[in-house]
Each structure stands twice: as structure tokens, then as C-alpha cells.
Length: 297
Image (tube, rainbow, N blue to C red):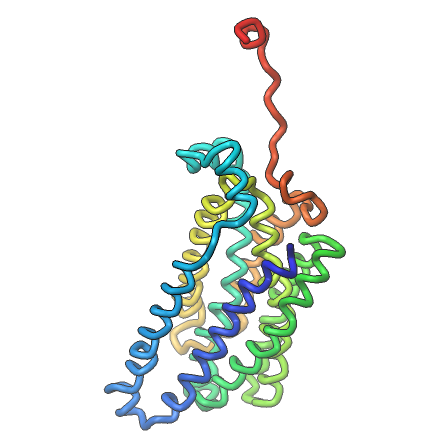
């Protein structure tokens, strides 16, 4: 399950890689042309991506587990009620775990802006290549980490990604501050392509296995989107933390490390699910019937 669900994030990293490659020639435009019309080109191209996505979604079949539930127990009419009653703690774990995405937003947005600022002076194109190659390495690392999680468990692999990313971001932002492009390239690939991929590649299985089929979609959707939304604002806070000149990289690194604490807590408090049969995932102990309920039955 870890290996196959990791394809979700392989698609994400592949999309980021393609997006970066599309923007490379755009970034090479003169400043006035880039700001006038160049930045719009990727958005125009996204129309084609939207059409392809629509066609794919229209042709997808329901999963066998969901289809079996629909034919047996029936689909839950109010999954949110069941989710919050039976799985509220797991929803909170997913919210906390999803904050690890802050590493991605800091890496792809704030670090890029910092590296190309006047205080460092790297070119946009060179830094885009750091992101492109890091995503390329991630395409290979993600299924490998996911396969490892099938063997040793979700929790240890996720913890490697969360704890490792907290430390690796210090090294990556420090490398940028030195102005050394080879060092920045190497540590960028290690940080985002390898270390972060441990958490990034295993979370689809790790989060999904916390819930039963009845509420799995709702649990993952609510938990991840809240966590991702908070992670999306990490760049805004990082810009303020970085000081008036925007060059206090150590403060941003500490902030990123702090955002990795909730994912660590979520993983440590979660149940290991790698070896639980699919049909038993998310099961809760049944409440013993009271004497009155027994008599009524």
C-alpha cells in the first residue's frame, strides 16, 4: 500500500518538475517582458492541464473497498458526523502531520526569493535548476522510501522525513547564505529530493490507513487541507521573521524546524498500520451493549 499510494506524490513532484522546466525559459526573459506578459504564459498553458485532469477524473472507477461497502454496509450519509465522533483524534494527527508541507513551501518559495535577492545574488535560472533537479531525485526517492515503509512501518520513515527535514533546512539555507552555487545545489537535492521525500512519499498511506473506508476520503481531505493551508502561510510568516532586509536565514530555519514538531508528535502518537489488513483499517472497538439495549434486542 505504501508503494502504490506513493504514486500520488510522484505525480506531485513530476508536476512541480514540469512546472519548473516550463518557467525556466520564461525566467530568462528581460525583466520588463517577464513582468508585462511572460508570467502569464504558464497560466495559459494550465488550461490544457485542467482539461486532461477533468478527463482523467471522469474515467476513474471507485476503489474495490468502497464499492464493497456501498453494496454491503451502504455509504455513510453523514460521513462528517461519523468522522468527528469516531476519528477526531486521527483528524488532528493528519492536520499536525500535514504541517510538514511547510518544508516544501519554504524550499520552493522563500529560499528561492532569498537566493535571488540582492543580499545573495544568485540568478533565477540557476535556482530554478536546483528545484528541478531536487524534484527529479524525489521521483526516484519517493517510491523507495514508500517501499521501505511497507517493510519497517510508516511511523519510522515519516519520522526520518520530519526530523531530518528540520535539520537539513538549516544546512540548505546556510548554503544559500554563502553564495556557493555547487553547495546550494548539493544540499538542495539532499534536503528536498531525499530527506523530505521520506515524509512526503509515505503520508498518503500513513494518513489514509488511520481511517475506515466509510470516512477515509473525508478524514484525509479535511485533515490535509487544513494542514496544507497553514503550511501555505509559512512563507508569509517567514518573510516577516527574516527581518527588514529579508536575510535572517537562521530565524527562518528555526521557524521551519518548529513547524516540523507537530508532524513528529502526530507520528509518535499514531498507531502503526503498515501490516494491518486493508479491510480492518480504521476499525474501532465496538461499544459494549448496555443491559437495557440487550433486553430490548
